[in-house]
Amino acid sequence: MYNDKVKEAFANPKNVGYIEDADGVGKVGNAACGDIMEISLKIKDDVIVDAKFRTFGCAAAIATSSTATEMVKGMTVDKALELKNSQVVEELEGLPPQKIHCSVLAEEAIKAAIEDYKSKKK
Amino acid sequence: MERSIYLDNSATTYTDPEVLEEMLPYFGQVYGNASSQHFFGRDALKAVDAARERVAKAIGCKPSEVYFTSGGTESDNWAIKGIAYAHADKGKHIITSVIEHPAVIKTCNALEKEGYEVTYLPVSNEGIISLDELEKAIRKDTVLITIMTANNEMGAIQPIREIGAIAKKHSVVFHTDAVQAVGNLPIDVVKDNIDLLSMSGHKFYGPKGVGVLYKRNGLKIARFMDGGEQERNLRASTINTPAIVGLGKAIEIAVANMQKNNERIAKLRDYFVSQVLEKIDDIYYNGPKDTAKRLPNNANFSFEYIEGESILMHLDMAGIAVSSGSACSSGSLEPSYVLLSIGVPIEVAHGSIRFSFGKNNTKEEVDYTVEQLVKTVKILRELSPLVKIIKGEDKYV
Image (cartoon, rainbow over all chains, first blue to last red; front, top):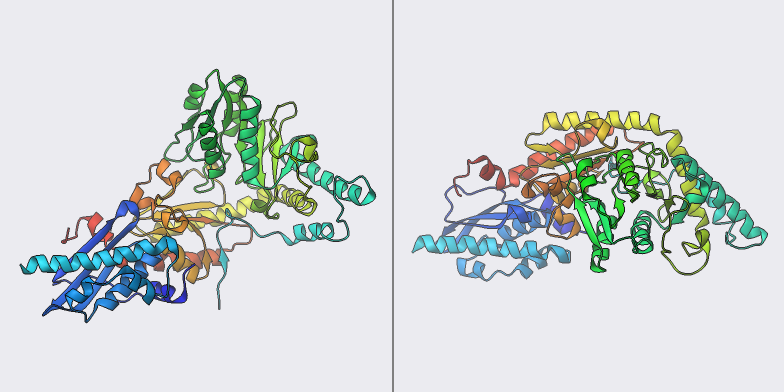
């Protein structure tokens, strides 16, 4: 049901872990629903210089976390705020319909991390 | 070397080559319609009759009590609706359990919409119903008790004989979904007080698309399919001769080799379970711990902090086929209702895997599976934000 790109992102995920001195952390989902995504960001001059994730969830949840963190690295926070789940799906060359919510979770985790950063900056 | 290890024998089994060989003539030379009166038909009918006798012998009933169907789901639907409709004048109450297969639960749900009342008995934390609660649930208008012989997810075996005795005492019809049990457990419908029993050919090395409903003679049941007069005018549809021949051969082989296969499979399963429990922390071994109360081929684990589909996919990539009780494999949001019913916490139930062994699995395959499983669990736990949260070490909460 998964294409090779999704399988590769799941089998060899990038950016696994937690940035100890993160500037913004976003955590979305809940264990009862079977999905939790946590993304931590290192931000310098409003540019995302590093992104890491930890995910409890299915193969698609892990693949979208890996891909989304790859995508936002190097982006300005404002650009990253515009990241849509459909772009993550596109990057993965498609997800099964019942797995689209995983990409939504990835989008939400990025947004939550950036909002955390912005609220700390104030 | 590419591995290919099949540990999903409760989902289906391969068709035994001996079974297939017995079936082949009925696709070719002996292609007659078993209901036809000419010699083509008579030859086919002879084979169907022989299969009926084999089934009867395997479960201790008369050949006239064996009805061939399209599989376990049809048998369950027919038994439950057929009894409910035919006995509606007596009452509209049915007793079942919370851990039945969807073929039973959903059929009961459908009857509820038609005005029937259904009692769903709870189960213990090992997945077994209470006989006291069963007896207390029986009412004057109870027409049917339907309780599975053995559970498909975590292998719990119900006290079928005692359930049958209680049903008999109160003159209530007793149906059992024995889809996971036939070929794995000895069954004698007379001694076990069973009025109706469902089975499915492909669970015991027979072909897919064929099953049986055993129905005690003299018990009134409504027709399930309207049409021709096949199966003593109770189940219309052209007789599926090759598949029926295959089921007959498969059940004969299964019963003849049951003890030998069970001893070997249970030993392999027990070895697997002990290895997993020894090598992986923070896991639940779901279902009965007492092997006498559990299908010999079943092992079911929940791995804390990680999700079942991810485990399944990693094992899949390592050449190991298993099945998951997680919501993510089925597309629903809830994890296995069976595991929730036996008290597995919802977040833990998401991380469940069923390993079901078959007659060809080897110790070497088990060793490889344990090795890959240990690796998989480690990889996924390193990815999981839950490990520290639940252990109370997370500084970000």
